[in-house]
Amino acid sequence: MKDREAADRRRKGLALKALRRRLGVTQEAAANALGVTVQAWQNYEAGKRHLSDPKLAAILVEALNSDREEFDAELTQIPDDLTPSQRERLGAREAINRGSSSQPPAAFHLPVGGIAHGGALRPNVYDDGGEAEVIDFSRYFAPGTRVLRLGGMSMFPYAEPGGFVTYNPRQPARRGQGCVIEMKDGSYAVKRFERFDADHLVVTELFPEERELQLPLADVAGVYAIGLRGE
Image (cartoon, rainbow, N blue to C red; front, side):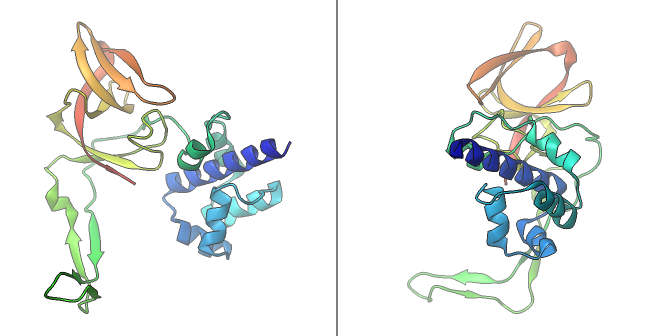
């Protein structure tokens, strides 16, 4: 009975984590909105705290501006037979994103507070340098680069829920490497590219077990190499 309760807490925690990531809310922002510490919020996502229905409802509304329907949609996508280590890392939903891909990517700006010095000639210190510098990372990507947010686990551990990949339609997929598949119905998938075989695209997914998939080329709009992937 206790094992079942612990499993239920873990599944709810993963659903909460997946929903937060999908909505683009950081752990810090969610904790502040709820009036708890970041560690307390992390305990919710790790399944270390019981989430009663009233408590869960308050968390969804106050911290995520969401509701139980959205939470349940995430919860139903989380298998109930994962190992504990997998449950800690996985979120929910298959790694397929729908929506327009024709919009140009937004500029990616990152504030840099200073310079880290080290080595024999200087002490290992961090110099904040006064006013922060802002680096526009968009200039490091070729024109036309796009980003997909991942929502599922079919490519775990190569790509995890809540992470992202970049791709460019000008860069074809490479054999044995991760790829973005654009389907003619407007959906996208992240898999490992294997080959073109007659009238099929052959790819591999990794989770829950490694297996080859064959997709009719008539349904595929494009197959592109993955550039960057991350959290």
